[in-house]
Image (cartoon, rainbow, N blue to C red):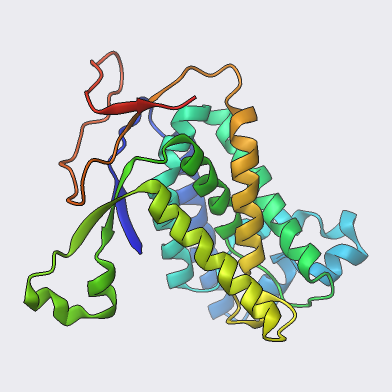
Length: 264
């Protein structure tokens, strides 16, 4: 399923999430311009290469962070930024700005560690914010499992002609179904790549599935400790398959809306 947005207003502005979006796009534009000029060293130099990290953890440790801001292509970047834009603001709203920044970083580092443990001998650079964003998805699943998420119709995704037969283009699904489907898909793809004899998911289409899995599990585990001392926030609740109308974010002291759930 391809999500287009959630219907879960926040109390505060997502400054850190916005900064992460801008930083990732800016880093890719810088990366793209350098590679177009012949800088073939960039991705191998700043991506996380398991075999180099194992051999020299102090010297190569910085690549765990730099790899989180590099991407392999425009679709890779746009897909990651779409998920971060949709789900990150609510997680930041629940955690607070500084805790969210730390949570995002730790999730990305855990994702890189998970991929390294699966194939420490790999010489293929790993790049992308997917692992850190997977942690955000795990946190969102814990905090807002019933929040409505608008997705493109799965039927139309595979059969575009279904539009001519009256199938709606957009549906609303609860977050647990959208995020759960994403995780199960990565889980199946990751372990099937091992079973097919590839050894690691790097060799299976260039996707680091186990980084996604590791980041997601980190998000599930770390979200509760990250909320210690934080005030509860309200969340929208899924009530039907049709996308609900947009709601204004309840910034400031605006009154709460009905049909909301608490996390915590």
